[in-house]
Image 1 (cartoon, rainbow, N blue to C red):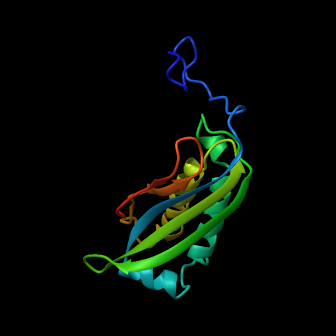
Image 2 (cartoon, helix red, strand yellow):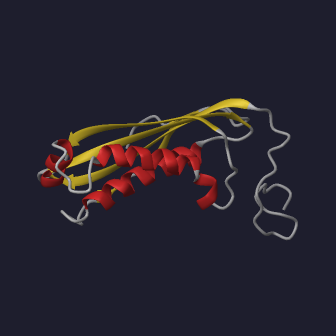
Length: 164
């Protein structure tokens, strides 16, 4: 089992020891989306949702999720994040629906990457939008959620060629 870094000698899962890895600048950018009805789109953009400013709350939820990723993903390390940024854009989808695109950018200077933090932030952001809007329509669709790019670390940089 020596070739599998996430398993111990007994074949059981373990958290990887990163203490010997060099501390480097690392970034990750993840995307998610949520497709909503025209009614929800109008209520969000006109600040008419009864629960408050949907995008402001979702942005805070995303930052909080990035900071707490290690608490919900079992083999993730607690990482001192140096930056988290969430941005939004709207696009028209099919059948009178609108897609909210979510970009979650995370940075650190550390021993391990921040891909999981970016993915968790993007996911929590979409889930928060759903939670705040479900009283209007439960038919919203979340996804896809994916890593767009990452920098730093021994495995080098990654950049997805096409957005999904």
